[in-house]
Amino acid sequence: MKISINKNDVDNIKTDAVIIPFFEDSNNLTGSILKIDKIIDNKIASLVKTKNITGKEKEIVVIHNFSKIKTNYIICAGLGKIKDITYNTVRKSSGNIIRVLEKLKCKDVVWLTNLEYNQKTDTAKMAQALIEGAVMGSYIFTKFKTDKKAVRSSSVNKISISTPDLKNTSKIIKSAEKGLIMGQAVNMARDLENTPANRLTPFDFMNITKDIFQTKSDISIDIIDRKKAESLGMEAFLGVARGSIQEPYMVILKYQPVKNQKSLWLVGKGVTFDAGGISIKPSKKMGDMKADMSGAASVLAAMQVISELKPEKNIVAIMPLTENLPSGSAQLPGDIVKAMNGKTIEIVNTDAEGRLIMADAICYAVKNQAEEIIDIATLTGACTVALGHSAAGIMGNKQVNINKMTDVSHFTGDRVWQLPLYDDYLDYLESDSADIKNCTETGGAGTVTAGKFLEQFIDTTPWMHMDIASVMDYSKTDGYAVKGMSGYGVRNIVEYILLS
Ligand code: BES
Ligand code: MG
Ligand code: ZN
Image (cartoon, rainbow, N blue to C red):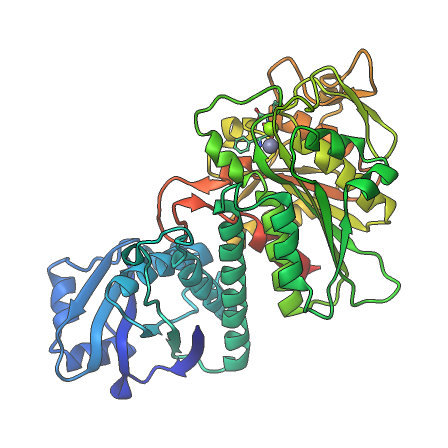
């Protein structure tokens, strides 16, 4: 997709559609909007007068059939109250509008905008949000549809952002392009998450990673296969893999542009299918567990952005990949495994597998002198009990970092909400036979006890854990959310890295 920035110049417009923002609390037609309206015989003004255009959030009014202006459509996009507008208002709006533009078969569009809607928003970041929303909102998953009619073909391939302020053009363009890279990365994560387990085994995931990163000179790939994992003492990881005939892998991506400096490690849960193992899950919605590798997908997608934006910071991603299935060779409840750091774990429930594979991946990061660890995982159904589908859970051992991630989430719209890691929660994991058990049996505090479990493998490294089970998927298409898997967390991770 091509992006350009133009100064508002409606006289010479030649495009498929012009998008105009409207507000509930300021509907005076001024500047370029007034200019356009004059050319189209005050159509907009009369629609405002009859309250067909009110500026309410999500309102989209399409006007067409013009002779004196060279555009097929004028689209009036409601953004709510100007004083309340946030980056996410614009991101959601452009997500909705892009699908209207596609229905109208528009390819080349001009987005009239102010970009600086109120004092709380920054011009360049607003351009980023607008493009992100458009790219994420246009997402479709049709890889496995053979009926060509189901495949939405023509998509918008040129967006010109038209703004009265051309002071920071290069900064705005850079930011809009960042939005494009971000949006595309989120869509890439969504593709991986939506792909079913028979088309995305741990081996497939590893090969996709190689395909994407092998040609990138500043990223190196390491693979820990079963044999290597055995020699490293990763019994917690390998125990989960025992039920499956698919080979498990830990895939490591290293981006280390700064010599002699430690790295920030990203750890992403990559269970390509979670049937629960011997503690098998009920069949209702079990198919969703194809996306139990969403943590790994978001880490992979974040590395894709990193490789494009090239920050001056060392970043390593580690993705433990396996299936969790029941079989004659599967791990059994009551088993005891030893993690890479020597801690023994009693397996109370084989469905609490994510924390087991994450534990060994975290141990590996700690052993390799991680400066900081961020882990992301679809870890507990309990996270939805706590937060519904409106936020991911976040916890960790360094408050300033959690605050920073929370700030970032206010910009991205991928909300995180902190849960506590009180010492008491460790008691919930006390085992009679091993150092710790893999989950609590009392029923409460499912998400924080999982976090508490992971904390036992962290040592003193600054760490935060994001449980994205609650936000793994969207139940309907709305704004930049598209029904299906969400690609949650990609933008949080990248923005956090870019801040440090
Ligand atoms: N992958 C699941 C968690 C999950 C549930 C993710 C729903 C997305 C949507 C995880 O491995 C799991 O099974 N967790 C158990 C833990 C329990 C056995 C302590 C759960 O949440 O039930
Ligand atoms: Mg499970
Ligand atoms: Zn799982």
